[in-house]
Amino acid sequence: MASIPFSRTASIGIAFLLTAAFSIFLTTALSPVLAEKQTGVSNDENEFVFAGTCHNGENYRLFSYNKVVNGQTSSHYDYEGPVGKGSVSTQASPRTMAVRVCRKMAEIIDDH
Image (cartoon, rainbow, N blue to C red; front, side, top):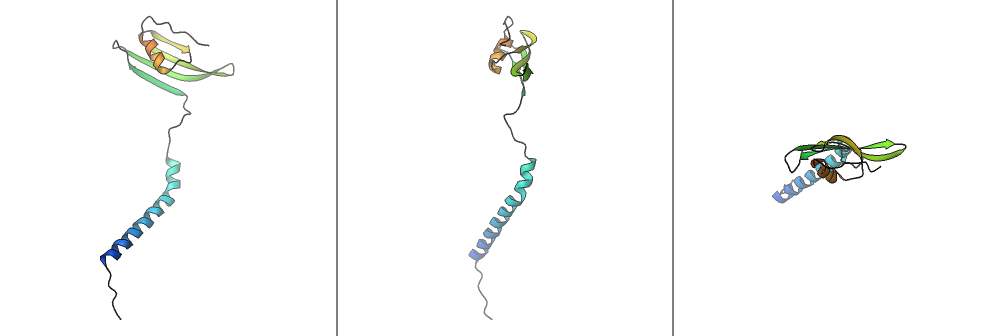
């Protein structure tokens, strides 16, 4: 019986094929398991907290949430900062509200 020479290239090729096959097996076998455990970021959040420091060094805090009033969903903020403490119903952006809350004499009124 004649011996067949086994080259280094053949062993590297076999190792590469086994690695590729194992990688494919892991991705197909584990992807359903990992998909169940993943928690993704979505756009269905309804409540947000914004906090920071005003230009004058005082702290502010905004709590943004949606509230259903008379069958209509409206945007609300609970705020606390140099302007005082309170709640308001407005479509203003969080950045706009932060600027308003940081001004001691700002007038914060409802949109609705």
